Length: 306
Image 1: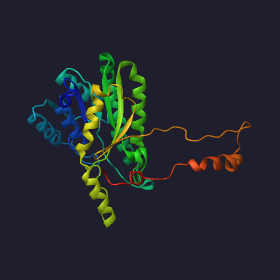
Image 2 (image 1 turned 135 degrees about the vertical axis):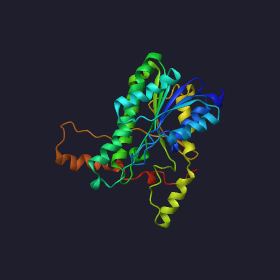
Image 3 (image 1 turned 180 degrees about the vertical axis):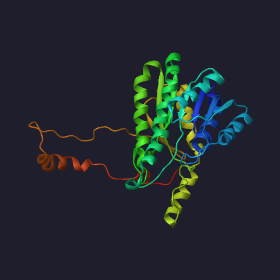
């Protein structure tokens, strides 16, 4: 296999490709031979404002390296504009083969202070946006009987973090969306997988570094540059991953993890059925040794990046 041209002839739509992980995925896919639609509205980290310049910077790098790319500045968070994102690929290149759902914003705040606006803004971009762009491409994938979705999830949703109820809910929702797409579209040779990326970017730059311990943690995260996540995205979009669908991976510096998915871990039954009192007396004591800890992402990934 020609490793440098694994996506030769493919057309990829990468949302949020104006910077960070999205830009690195767009650049890597272009180097692998794909023609790229760089989607980015150029907003702030919280989703405010708009500018074509971040996307233009990505495009210039691709062009300088001999690749092909066009810019689209439509929002993923609206059904009509998400359709225009996919239409941009068809207009420019005549087809679409890969959708990378990477666009995102953050509105971090402790749960009891989170506003409905903070909730809806994050859900709209991450979860609704992933559905809208995926759904807009689905008919084209179905007709050509091929296609690959790569969705960005997060250990904030898979495991947990403080102050991110909106982001965590959206990101765990994306894993369920991806699994549903994988199940529904397998008959059309369409694949759908998730990556939980670790990287220092705008999305992590708000992590506090006020104490020596916090500063040390941030220094470790800064080692994990966004480009470390791009090889997995290229692989999942390529024919080399034609057997891979419905999976969740995490990429952390030079580490790659296949993440578990929710399954029963212990069960108990009673022929006569249960009352609340019997659950308290028998069921919970039998189950509690297998209970899941109330931990956060950093406690599960507790070792330094390799």
